[in-house]
Image (cartoon, rainbow, N blue to C red; front, side):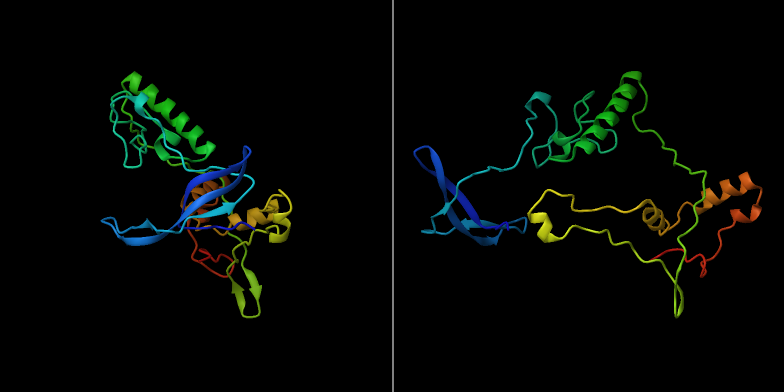
Length: 230
């Protein structure tokens, strides 16, 4: 039921006895493209009008205050410029992460940046090189590919899972979770549809554990092992 009105510029708030009753807006049209290729809005003369409303929620964007960081390089968007891997800034000994670097983002990403920054600060104070060669995670367990679905024409590759959703009608009348999720069985079957980049590692580890040298050989795709689901 949300109505989006584009190319409008709020001009003033209308009130009656201290109560908001409307928002005066000005219509715009797209002007010629500038040097970046963007067509910027141009106000239309005489297009002022009042949009009636009872509640006004202002959401005009956010911008970090980076003055406290001192002489540090900033991006064109007004955020602090930091190395994506080490979080180091142009100011020696200063590390930055979270929204002040990425702009408005998730809490999870901000916490992850904080933990990464802690590691980098420890390396910096210890005189250790910030960039370290990483070790790829190696699984010691082999999980077989998803079984192929049988059809009249023979074996075919497993189909991609469609996550069940709550209908649009129910969404409008409640705060119920939209994506219902899947069962453990379905999740395991879906995980088996991956490209199996781990086969050379997990098959080898399983072969050593079971004493079966044949498992260390990557078998070619077949009806029972369809490989890449496409």
